Length: 75
Image 1 (cartoon, rainbow, N blue to C red):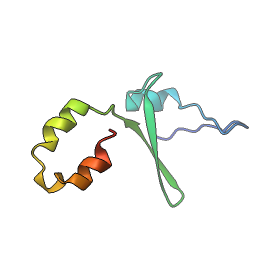
Image 2 (image 1 turned 30 degrees about the horizontal axis):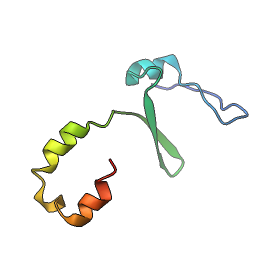
Image 3 (image 1 turned 45 degrees about the vertical axis):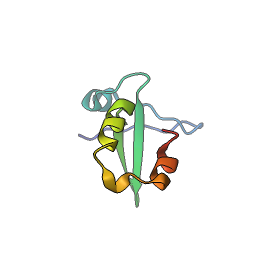
């Protein structure tokens, strides 16, 4: 799929309908821009599931240290 858009004087863009439909995004969703060289990849950011993360964290012993707990405790 190829779609185009223009940047406004304020640096804003509108995501074309075909792209929104393909990504399954709607108002209020968050998008991620991955930049590599002169290429940009646009992805839908899925909401963070804290309960799932907590359940999985118990199974990941290699990440179970006081340093890791301090680094991720704010999430």
